[in-house]
Picture (cartoon, rainbow, N blue to C red):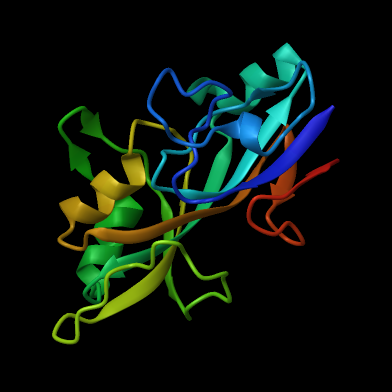
Length: 180
């Protein structure tokens, strides 16, 4: 079984809250025996895969398999060609150089409103980029955009793809899931 879940902002990518008081997957998915294949931070949104197949879970989540993940990222400021090129080549972070990424500026995607909304500042522009990475370091996308001078304001995982399959958020509303 494979479940595609559109994780809302503020939800933990686990079934227990360990006393944090935050909503968890258990608040949305009542299917026994499925586990997340990878994670999304509490303050990130979008596609989270859950499965009851341990081998598939490992192939999706293990960085050795280099499964691609595409994120729509709202960043502060307007990255110039040099910033986008730096993201594409790989960015030096405290834990080393990231792998090359695919990056491009995109029009603002047609997304649901976020609750709470992203802060708006009249004096600071923002824009959206599409960023595809093939590794999954802790808070990697946020650290990459910050390293090139454009902090992440909103982060939505839109697609996961590779030799194991190709899944996207298409047709899955926030807080909802579907079996594939």
